[in-house]
Image (cartoon, rainbow, N blue to C red):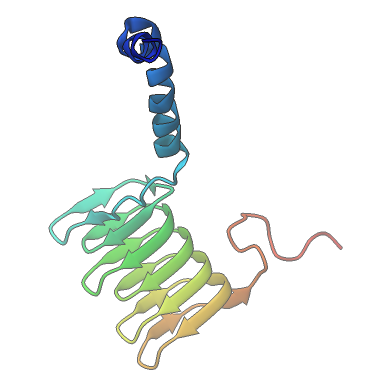
Length: 151
């Protein structure tokens, strides 16, 4: 007889508050779990942007950009052209870049055409890539300060 009133009590509104407690951990688990990485932003081949592009995510350029680009990962497609400074953690150039390139990891593929200086931490240049400019290694190539500090 005592067990029936106890089992009736959990179905009352007074125990809905304890039932709400499991919902909070479920919500906190979803908020504490890492967010899925968003898809890269794609500048399609029929699109031309005149202005700067800034993101903390990834950008894939298939069209043309006349302006500076700052991103986490930048991929310049084979038919793409970027005229401006590129600053990214990871840069893969398959197309054309006219301007300074700064990146922790820079990769010029066989179809790359780069006219400008490259400041990098690591670099890979495939056979067949066209490059005019200087290459300089820095431990922190993403900072705007010069490599040599005062004398």
